[in-house]
Length: 72
Image 1 (tube, rainbow, N blue to C red):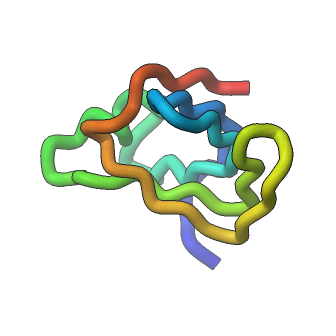
Image 2: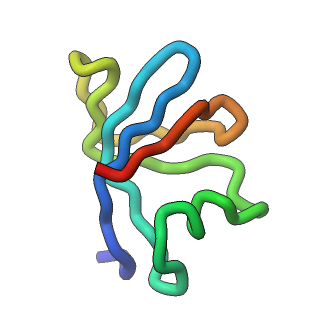
Image 3: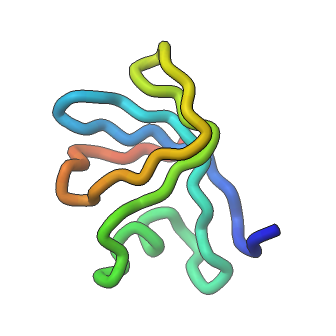
């Protein structure tokens, strides 16, 4: 099991809205700390609900396509 803190977030892009679990690594304290890492090009979500209808076990989102992120 990976170490860190699992948080539920909503990610909005131009086309879709994704709600899923995001793993904040142990050396980071906030979602924003983990997402703003320059080396990270994608964010990974698990147990994802896409546009409040479709389910997926895993989604990798390119950070350049993201409009907003909210912790739920």
